[in-house]
Length: 129
Image (cartoon, rainbow, N blue to C red; front, side, top):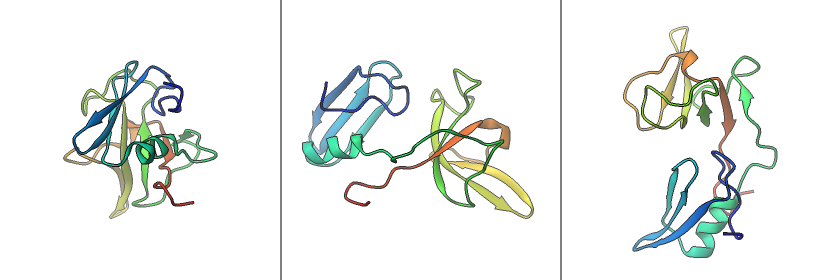
């Protein structure tokens, strides 16, 4: 589907835009990511295609995100995750009582610092520059 940018998780162009009762769903056939976007079709496509201008994976060895800054997280050394069957997550770095851990969205409990090797800023919401 040429109107959609490639998958931000794996880079594949094998995508499907599916109409739902409350918006649209975009599914990647390569990495099996599914994103539900409760918007009109043109807004859903814009949201999918919106990416940070200079989005690059940042090694946690080079730099860490700010405390409580929500980011995309990935471990490039794993093809699966003990958290669940996804290797890419969103979450934030939490610094408390002199210790650091990852707080992963949708996952109970703190994750060890070595659970992820790279991070990337989240894109701005649609309509926000």
